Length: 203
Length: 203
Ligand SMILES: [Ca+2]
Image (cartoon, rainbow over all chains, first blue to last red; front, side):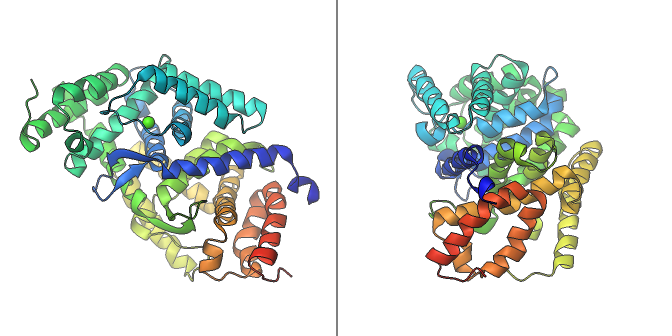
């Protein structure tokens, strides 16, 4: 009826969801596992939400898989304004954090106030990387791309001419911090790949 | 350590997650809101998981937004084997359902048995479309594409030369069933679009 058609709360939510559609056009450095193209941040967000459901048992302390999945569904929306920052590129971390927080404020403010607050709080918890849910979620965000690189024949490691030391510092260290079991699984595979496929030292 | 690196449970889960990557290459009939390209089923799954979080309050009876979101993250995985079935195309519904159930069995069986059972049960609950969570989730899956079509200037409505009666039958009726408030919001907008932009009768 005409009342529902004019519901301002619902209209606000649908404006937010329409804006979110733009995340499908934000391109990442990572290739799909079959190396056919670069992936975008929306499909990446789907994939790691699935990682959260499937791998929650491997977190070093109990996590709420629902909260982790929700964080991961929301976490990259800021890239609609701020773009994706490739992990192996050069970056001013403070400037990037400020740009992403401004983006979070703009985007979530499209929603009704209570939902804006809830989403912004959850997004900032993820970014702060301190709670068990956030730390595990952040680790999944780092853990997913190396698996695609292994499948794709190198992917962003080749494109960015990444040394094992850089991979260890920017990716491995963070996976190890929030998901040591996943790092123990990944490390020997990446080491062998860097040595045998990329011919690079892993000392 | 070597033990974690050989963990068969973790390895099984990662094989499933690697297989899931293929959903990013399943193309749907729907265009992105900016009409720049067709969307794929992985980014669509992300988008409607977000719809579930944002719109749960508009369900006609209480739903568990976490369960709905999880159903929607899983619901299209079967398209890796069965492909996407455009809602306006011709289809043998029974054959499609059988093919999708076989796909669900193959894909979820990549996981450890307890997780396979849990995911298969949730996926079948969604497909059965009987519980409050499933019915609302199914409605979101129908509600999302028309919003993209409205933004994209017609999208799959133009490509498939869809009449308003067909839209009403294959899409509107199902949204109305599981999410009447969303249908009340959408119906007048689609009616005006069909009349004014597509020049089609909506009687
Ligand atoms: Ca990111």
